[in-house]
Length: 352
Ligand code: IPM
Ligand code: MG
Image 1 (tube, rainbow, N blue to C red):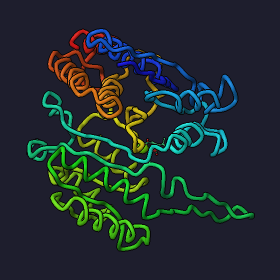
Image 2: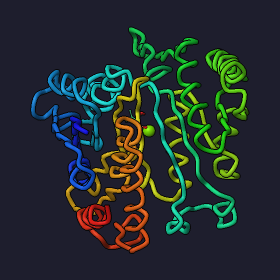
Image 3: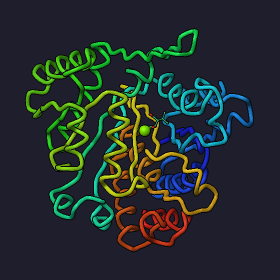
Image 4: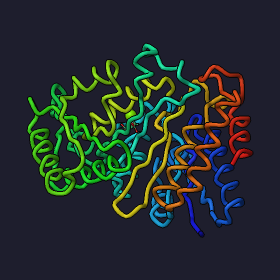
């Protein structure tokens, strides 16, 4: 298979972790006889320093022309003083998502057997099972509504728009994912207060009844969902939710598993194209030290093989190599080990 992957290292620990994921993908290509071209592009603070724009036109064009995008992390204190629309988070990340049409964000969170003690929850709660998938709507809601400040600067307004088609398409992604897992969707909203949530609830229920009657569906208010995630996480299989609630709950879910350094993500369009990134950020405090955990990025590369290229065996090979690396005790400091980023990358690549 011949594929072009746009590679965005980004800021902070981004370059260190992405290099390891690219090496693992190169190993996969060699072993399974694929031809992957890695097209490295600037995004984020790194792009701002080089060009004055966190998302240069040629980067966006290269991403649109690629078969998939692999991204490290963007942003850091150096660029925090930029005005809102120019900041890496808004200009680079949110614009990429919108321009590439990546409306479906998949964030799986599970406890790896060898990392069971990493979870801050009681052993009993962990042993009940933590293996869930957050399906977050990614191009709508309050992050993409109008952001307004009054002329006198004393009041502000952020709009939170959602339309039926936007809710329908993300609901279908969640129900389809549930069918490949434990067949249950929990749709999270704030329907006791928000009109967008009432529209969300009606639409999700209708799609379930009409198209996925075999999938179990329940609804939960977001405040309760935040509580249940730490009280009884085994309740959840697929969590379907809107953009901001998904942002918040996916961070919470990552901590429940014990280590944010392990969680990959896929941001998908309807046709299989996607952007893949770890859910952690650029971690400026440890950048350049060679100690960042590359596994979330490596697992994101596995998601790319599965979701964008349909290479299930290759994706599985990476995931098994990660499990075996964890068992072997080659761990970065966030997991209690002393290995360097590169050691972990080499350990995974050599097990592929
Ligand atoms: C994430 C991040 C981003 C988001 C920020 C950096 C804009 O928190 O991917 O979860 O809110 O989507
Ligand atoms: Mg977030």
